[in-house]
Length: 272
View 1: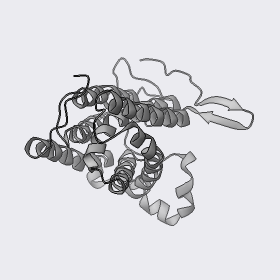
View 2: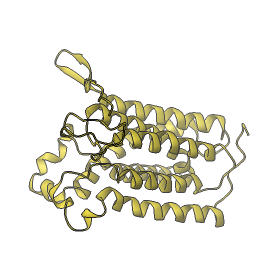
View 3: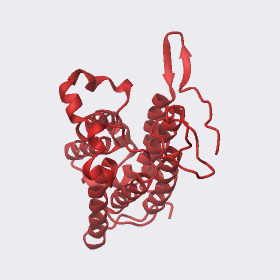
View 4: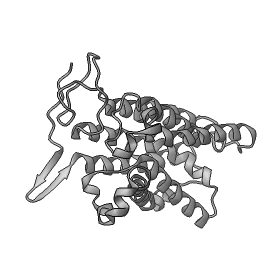
């Protein structure tokens, strides 16, 4: 068993103002994704339809998509009955409750509105944005770990940890599993595809499939959500997170297939 690191969830205290690691993770993920998108467009696709200026212009829309979509996704996917009875709680994001799948829908909506406004192809943009999302996934899961939340199931593996709010038994540090798989590994795969000659739809397809697979597997190690209606029936054999990943993986496979059949070849990267 490994001791859980004693890290204060509050990174900085400025008088009455407390800056949490979770907030820092969100900001770091936003800016890392933005700079990666600009770097990709500038170095590898200088003549492509997406420019560094486009990345700057869409930045605030993607932030809104993540925050609003993530919160509404949690409300609708995980605990709709509670929030319908207590609508005032919807805005209390500081009490926790964000959904990646909802945030993804928010991001895709922002890209759809932006590309239509500028006469661009949706997947030309999403194929560039997809790898950068992995920064937010990695930083966010690390912040979950620091907060001691979203921990794993009880285990006897040597690296199991006793989390402050997880009872006396060691558990899987599933947040770290997700940070590594969804952040490091998935980013590496998507980046390598993005900088090589590839077809439209391809990077987006591998992101949807890759994230869906990683999350689906990690859910077997992650403690199920402590929400009453998610503890019975079908949820005894499959989690809400896994259910939401199934259409993601199906869409990913469809996009990969489409890229092979009808995807327009992307120009050779400038640095290839």
